[in-house]
Image 1 (spheres, rainbow, N blue to C red):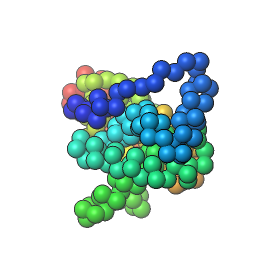
Image 2: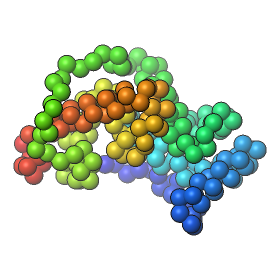
Image 3: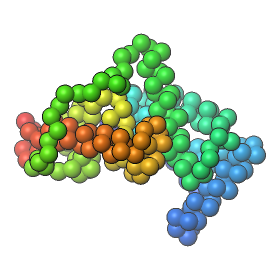
Image 4: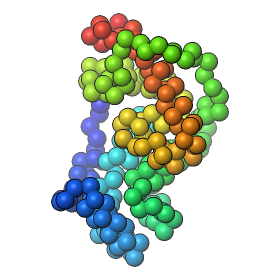
Length: 211
């Protein structure tokens, strides 16, 4: 994968002591300060969350420069909408939702077709194929190119939901918030995405990544 220019710029993190609850409390304090107009607090939130936002956008755009620009726009919009965030604990998923809207706007402005409503006619494989899970494949550098190609064949909505789950570790409830879906739809779409990837990659697994 190409060098992640943005992630290097945003590498500074605040030291977190005392586990998850302390991290959440620290983030809530930063949000409170940022809502009051504290630029240092907002910059810290930017530094903490922008690498994940950039990675998500890079996976959608498949273009570093576009991901850079969209990441900046995500935080510009977030800065003006912090008062609309109702659950501070879901800041990360809220930012990813803004990022996805920016991606969709970019696609529409360029007249790129989005196959959002159509259902693929791929068969649902009820029996597990003899292959590792998509999570395992993400850890296998030799399969990265094949996986990227297979992900690119998923329709945009399904690809976004799967990435939010396996790459960003979001709970199904948070994915529902980002995508604007019901919980059953989230689970169904992610299940279908996993099956599509397994079917697409089944011929390569077991041959060292070579067909």
